[in-house]
Length: 352
Image 1: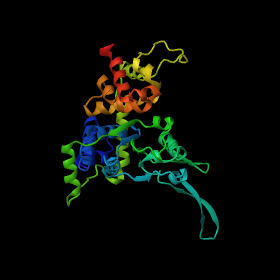
Image 2: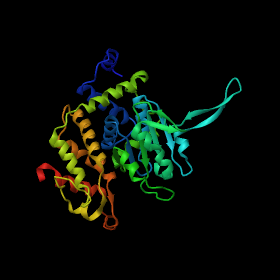
Image 3: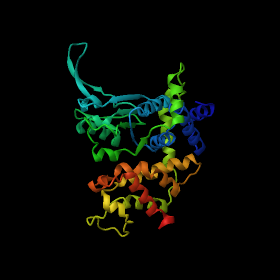
Image 4: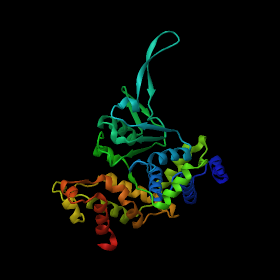
C-alpha cells in the first residue's frame, strides 16, 4: 500500500474520486501480473466488487477463471475460500453444521462449525456440477449476507463477494443454475480464448523459473474497512432522472409483450427479436446492475455522475444472463448477446 493510502487510513479520511481510480487501477495492474489479457473481464469483475454485487464467470477450461479469482483474493489481502462443487456436495458442506463437542467437565453440547462460506471472498468453482439444492445454499448469503443453520442466523463479515465459475461446454453431470440464483449475480463475465500473442505471453510467464510477485493493495488490518469505504463512495455517485429512466426502459425492452403487465402509463419499446425469441426478460435487478456498474465506470473517468455510454458498456454483463430464450431462439442460433445488442440500439436516446 502506498504512503498516501496509509496516511488517509490513519487519519480516517473518506476516499475521493481520485483515490478510487488509483486503487482500482492498481488492483488491475497487480492482477495482470498473473492474468494475461482479459482486460474487459477483469474490469467488469472489479466493477461488480466495488458495486457490492457478485459475479458469474463463464469460460472454457484453461482460460484462467480460477486463477483470476485466487489472484484477486491475494491482491485485496482479504480472507479467501474455495469450494469445488461436485455432484455429491451437500448444503451443510458449504454453510457449516452443528457437531457434538465434549467440554472439560465431560458435558456434551452442540456447537456450530462454520463452513467455507464464512469468508470475505468465496470462489464457487464449477458451480453447475452441484445439484440445485446445494446451489441454493448460496442464495441467502449472496442476498442477505447471512447464513441460517440449525435455526440460528449467523452474519457474514463485510465485504462479502461471491465469484462462481461455470463451464459452458461440458453438459454431462451438470445442473443448470436456477433462474433465481442467476439473477443474484450482478454481472456475468465471459472469458474467451487468448489470441496468439497472448498465448505466447502465457507460455513465457508460466513455464519459466520465476513466479509473478503479487503486492497486496491493502494491509490486512485495514483491507475490509478500506474496501467498504470505496464501495460507499460508489453509492454517492449522482444519477440524473433521465439516466434512471433509460436503465428502466432498457430492462422493460427485454421483456416480451405480456398482457398481464397492467398499470403502466409508459409503454415499453418493442424489439422484434425480443417478441420472437424471449420467454422472460430481465428482472428489476437488471436495472440495479446497470446503475451500480455505471457508477463505478463514472468514478474511473473522474466523474461524479453517470452517462448513457456507461450504461451501454455494461448492458451485456448486466442483462444477458437475466434473459431466458425460447426454443425458437435455439433453433435459429439467436443468443442473448444479440438480443441485448438490439435492445440497446432500439432504446438509446439518440436512436429513438
